[in-house]
Amino acid sequence: MTKDLISGEVLKAVFPLLDGEDLVSCMLVCHQWRDIARDDYFWKCVCSKRWPSICKRPPPSLSYHNLFVTFSRSQPPQPLPPSRLSFDDLEFYIDLWSEQRLVFSEAVSGTALLRGIKNPPPGIPDALKVHLDSDDYKMTMQVEPRFSLSLGRMITVSILVSRKDTHQIARIVNQSHFGYVDGNAFRALAYDYLNFAPGHPFVSGIRAWVSLLFMANNALRITDVFGIEIDFCDAASSENEVLWLLDMLDWK
Image 1 (spheres, rainbow, N blue to C red):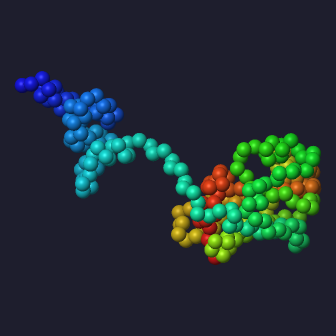
Image 2 (image 1 turned 90 degrees about the horizontal axis):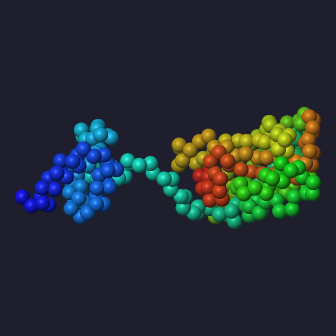
Image 3 (image 1 turned 60 degrees about the horizontal axis):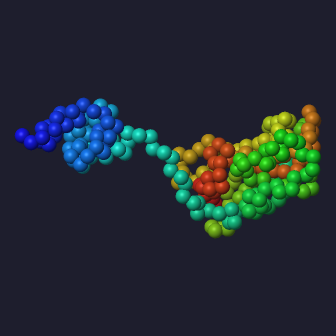
């Protein structure tokens, strides 16, 4: 028997004892080892240790080699392709109420929310300055004129959004109550759960957050609200992710 034939027989006896990672490494040694290790019988031995049930009734045309290569390792998250939606196509309608009194009402373009607050008022609290200067993705708008609110009243917010490409409207927030005031961060927060189109039945539990940014507060009032922030931090932390999320809303 030739030397290669003898070594080949030895490899055929050893390869079934290896795990998948070692068998992959063996394929890189030389052409002879690679050609022998391609035999799907060895990969069936590997897969029978990891998924013994699939070897009892394998799917038609199953390659155990492909099975191991495809499913043995955790798949890295795939980047989202660019959304078909653009902030140029969006208009946001924001209405803020204190009891029955309308406090703020504005139609804001998507591009304006992207630009954010470029010239915050002088003397804003350090906590807010750090927040606005951070690289975290945020959608903010400046409020003019500024206003103050009594915490003894029910303060609510509603937000609708329209899209120019399909001439449709969706709801983001529906009369949500600012139920939490973070005095240290100088923010009052409200949220509502997004309504998604029937074509996305397994997407749920994602909130839209609305924050009022103010200069000062006490137990009774928040003073000088100068900005409004919208975010979807439950699920989206970039412009593209937000656009994908908005595209899945129940547009009418």
